[in-house]
Image (cartoon, rainbow, N blue to C red; front, side):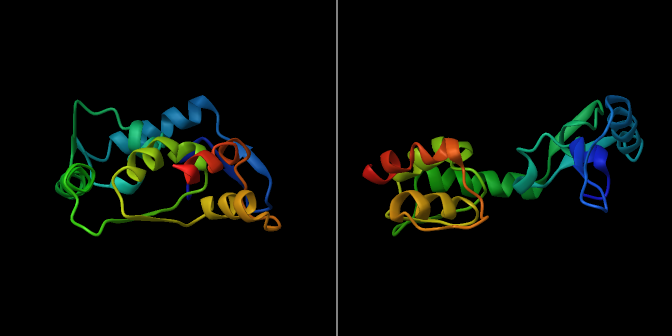
Length: 150
């Protein structure tokens, strides 16, 4: 991120962890709010994040944009009346963060591919594979076998 106040924490140019003060985060959010009169969120892929640009722009009118609407229509169709065959491809870092989605999709899909950082947790648990310094979700690892048994 370009501004540490976007997430409230980050890493500086030397690799040191840094944290923004509450006051600096609020100033950053206020500066974003001054850029417009209406907040339109069209970023489906980041809408779940508690970043300043997602939740910190406190304007009287906040709406979802047309792209967000389109994503939600497609997502709803995929969850309620999917075309067949239905393949779900999921990514992300933590299994534990996606467990409800995974469990819900398992009853609906023909096949599922787990990619991204989550894949390392799956291969380590299921195949006892060495993953080096790759992402491993300790909490999520406890539910991998249950997911695969389903």
